[in-house]
Amino acid sequence: MSTHIANPSRTQAIMAAHGFRPKKHLGQNFLTDTKILTRIVDAAGVDATTDVIEIGPGIGALTEFLAASARRVVALEIDAQLIPVLAETLAAHDNVTVVNADVLKVDLPALMAAQFGAGQPAKVVANLPYYITTPILLHLLNSPAPLTQLTVMMQKEVADRLAAGPGSKDYGSLSIAVQQRMQVETAFTVSRKSFVPAPNVDSAIVNLTRRSAPLVAVRDQAGFDRLVRGAFAARRKTLWNNLINLYGKDAETKAKLTAALAAAAIAPSTRGEALSIAEFGRLSDALGAQGV
Ligand code: SAM
Image 1 (cartoon, rainbow, N blue to C red):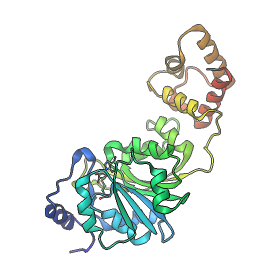
Image 2: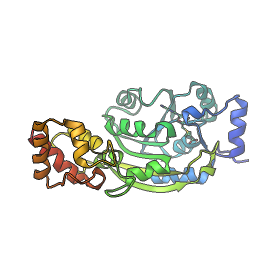
Image 3: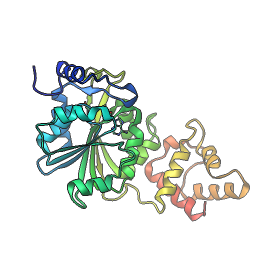
Image 4: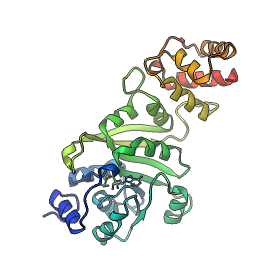
């Protein structure tokens, strides 16, 4: 039997020894393929100088591999029942700290400063819980914590949305929110058979590298984000219909919207999914100039 945690029979044995049953509502699907784990650590470019935040260590399958390569690993696990399991499975690694916390609620900048040193950057490496992938991604993207890179496993459908461009059915506000801040590269896909219990979908590992500046410079990032969400609020509606739903249907607002669209050289009859990030940027600035 392999000495690694990521092995179907060892995973079952660890769970049985602790009377642990995976919780579907917490997205608990544990990796049981060491080849995949090696590829994740390689794709993340983790070495002895890297500090890592792991989200959701589960029973420690990925954590064990990260610990063997990284300088330090801080693993955030929401499920208190897994804390004693991890204490046992990771006992041999003195560069790992497991914290019982919800990644969406923990003060990440303070935790990182305390664990890694003030201002010290880190990479996130994680097999994300599927039920909450998008909120976690948006939370990390907008966090002031010095996270330089996210190498994260997610449902393949979500990975496709992150990488999608204009005109694709997968292109939407998530694609733009992510691409505005990060470079997106799909590293590889993973079969559902590599997990215990097996999820209903296949997965992909995505590398997100933080840009030094947003992809498209805009005068008001919050206004841009609001415009983009509004433009995709009803995908089958025209841009114009989504804009009047977002900003208002009165004559004065309509005149400003018409002027902004003309200034940005965008047809009101187009759909949000046809607009590039640069076009959204132009429109956002033109709306700002109109005081919308
Ligand atoms: N890393 C392990 C692996 O690859 O085998 C487990 C990955 S499993 C897909 C997701 C893990 O995230 C589970 O252990 C789950 O309890 C944990 N989790 C779910 N929601 C969380 C949250 N909000 N904050 C921190 N951990 C969470």
